[in-house]
Length: 128
Image 1 (tube, rainbow, N blue to C red):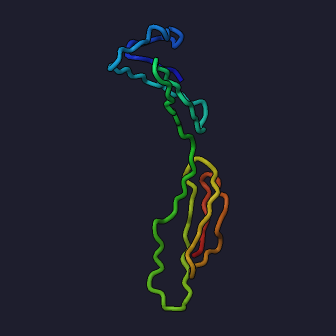
Image 2: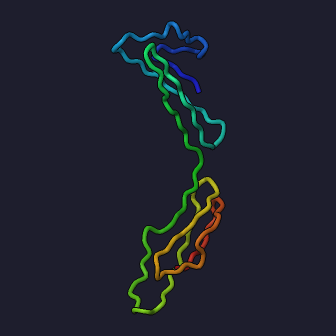
Image 3: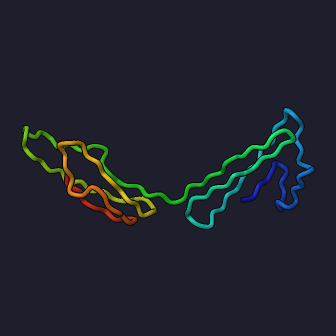
């Protein structure tokens, strides 16, 4: 990560800590450029120190995530009381990371598989 102010510094080493003082009541802003080397989560705590206090600015970057494609609702249609009905549903991992999934169903409902591990691009059929 490198920081630059409105006065462009070509090299972060050119930034002299003693010459970067800001008068009380004034503000200064920095632009943080982030160039990830891999698709992973990154976390950095930037420590800011003033004459009176010290505080931390958390900088977070989120890498790859799994994303399951699953219907928002399941419609079984009209089903007579005390009669079983089945509803097949396809789930897919459309994200960029392998994921472990788990499904809970309310009492009265059953599912053929309640958990599993799904690779990127993989799909599975569940029967409710």
